[in-house]
Length: 83
Image 1 (cartoon, one colour):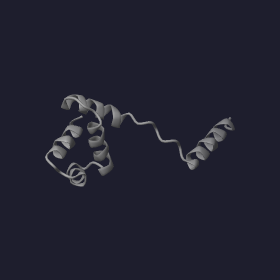
Image 2 (image 1 turned 120 degrees about the vertical axis):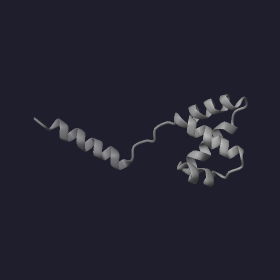
Image 3 (image 1 turned 90 degrees about the horizontal axis):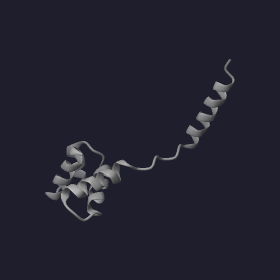
Image 4 (image 1 turned 60 degrees about the vertical axis):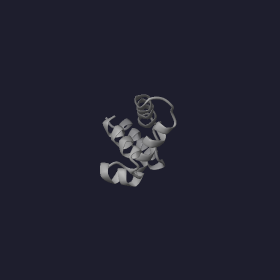
């Protein structure tokens, strides 16, 4: 929450997404998601921040890669053959 407020404060002062990312140590895409999520909602600063927290931090998990699926099948097979 604090990092998001810092990002929004810097953005309001006119800093670019790249500069904010560089100075805060966050990924540029994360900074962009924070700013975009707060711009999508009307209301007070606190309302926008709360919405952005929910929007950014609650993302659906990415599906497992093909290699991860094959590995999990192999592990399951290996476990079932153990005595």
